[in-house]
Every structure is written in structure tokens, then in C-alpha cells.
Length: 191
Image (cartoon, rainbow, N blue to C red; front, side, top):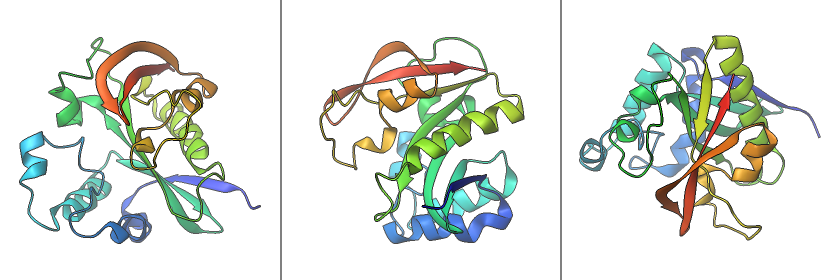
């Protein structure tokens, strides 16, 4: 199998970002769920997710990373400075633990046909490399502990604690947020 390559979502890569998200339709997330308040996200006009993500990709900092296999976009990792993730800023279930300017990893998306091939792991390692190169002091994530049980992909979009632990993240606190009925764990990697 050819290696998976990772690149930041930049203006020149917009066609690849669009290719990853367009199958979800106009009302798809377009990686906006955490970037807006609950009411703004719920009341957003049809097609606004795509417009917002395009603006974020064009204006930086990069809102995510793209995974490529054979030059084809096959995966996405959404992240951004926590202070710019409005839903996280206001969250009562995922606490802010200190004033450190962390970036939050909020989601993974791997195209059907490319799952269970290491794409999410490659994206996570790419996020760590990106953060180090960019001088970001720490990364945070809010994955679930699968407890070695299968989890539906719609709930696993937040990632799994085991993958983050393998990348050097530490468990900081169990949050009151849930995915697939399991608590989400605040994990952090100091850089």
C-alpha cells in the first residue's frame, strides 16, 4: 500500500476539501459544529456550512488536515485554536482546564472504502507534526474510550482514547459530554 500523506487545508487545496465533504449534502456539518454557537449552527441557512469552511480554509489558520492516498483525498481532521471554537468556548460539558492557547482536535472523517487502513492515525500524527512546526504549545482532544467494543462510525468521529494515547496524549479528565453513550475524555499533548 502506498503511504498516506497529510497536508493542511489551504486555499489551493479547497477542491480536495470540497470532495471530502460534498457527499454529505448542503446540510452536512462541513466541520462547523464546534466552530459556531449552538443556535448559529442550528439556524444556519442551507449551504452556509460550505461557505463558512471555504472562508476558513482561505483565511487561515488552517481549520483542518487532509489525508491523501494515491493523491486522492481520503480523510479529514478538524482542529483549530480552542478560543476560536465557539461551541467549545461556551461548553458546559467539556471544560477549559487552563489558559494555555491549545488547539482542539474535534473530528475525524475517513471516506468509505478507506477506513481501517490507518488514515485516522496518520491524520493524528500529522496534527502533532503540524502543531510542533507551527509553535502550538499543546493539542487537546475529546475522544471516547471504546472499551474494546465496536462503535458506530457516526459516534466515533471524535476518535478513540487508545489512538491518542499511542500518539503521546495524556488523559486529563473525564468530561460530562457523551458520544455513543460513553463519556468523552479530555486528553492533552504538551508540545
